Length: 441
Ligand SMILES: Cc1ncc(COP(=O)(O)O)c(C=O)c1O
Image (cartoon, rainbow, N blue to C red):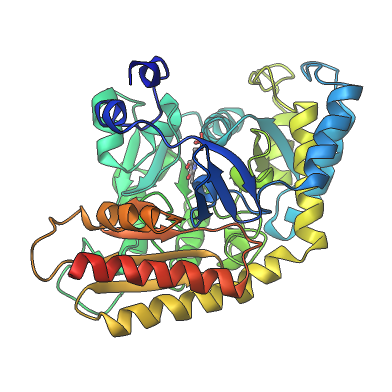
């Protein structure tokens, strides 16, 4: 297994990998991927929350090839641009107008999109002559990426602690996790104390020190935590009241995942800044984007003392081939009605998960889905499986039965390609129930 160790895998237990060896995925088609031994897996996790249009889509492959033949690369710094990235910016702005987004800067992935958002927020207040507003408020269990800034605003403690000290001025508030409310753990009634905690944090820090609040509309990697109704609207209002920018991290929730074009729209809010990646290309090539409102953009146009540019940009910002992939991906989502499909298939997914909860009430704490993002939170009343390990145990059984999902503690999470059919959803959830029965046996 020495061979496997030349590649240091991301978020990978390398000792375990050295023994078991990696599963080498060689091909994908629709909702299925295949390994080098010929095994077929239904990809219930959408290749890390993102294979929205499914695998093997000819339209995107051809668009990539055409663009690579015409112009594989030229930078966009200074006065240069390329046609696909201009067209993609136009396309995104027309899609995201209802979310108040009017201008887009490209990067390569979600972390860079978040990094860009944080830097925009800081400089925005400097330009306004309010440079004391530099802090960020974020939530426990949030995941925003791995670069030092994005990592600093992460709320997954285990991901952060080994790399401290991180960015100063990051304040964590409780997550809107009604099932495990950290503010009123014994109450069964949600009073949205977590929304008020954002206001409390702003007041405690001093509104004149806070630049922005950052939130995933649904906290995906934290365990698919759906916000209670009205939470996001209340927090949006609080941010407005205290002049705190609202950054919506839509890296997972964009492009139809929740049955809406964006999570912001799904929950009825308009952010000041929005980050995107993942479903922007459905993974055909890496691409990130940070969108801003007219107000934010125009603030940067009038920077008396600071000179004419936002001094930020990744070499590959607006990569022409990645942009061509993004355009072809969005065209497919629209042509095939995948946002609406995600909404209707989500009802089937939710029904099926709730059915598992009814039949295994003692073992299932929560079963829910919004569009094609779903969760099944488990516990072992027999005490044989340690708390925090059930998700992994489930995912191992499901893998053996031909379904890939992502376990997060005791939560099995679902985010299949949006092209999934009702029949495939029922197969995926039947295998989920079979795995649960194996654990119970
Ligand atoms: C909400 C959110 N933001 C940012 C990121 C970071 O994206 P990337 O891994 O592409 O850097 C992720 C990754 O899962 C994410 O879920």
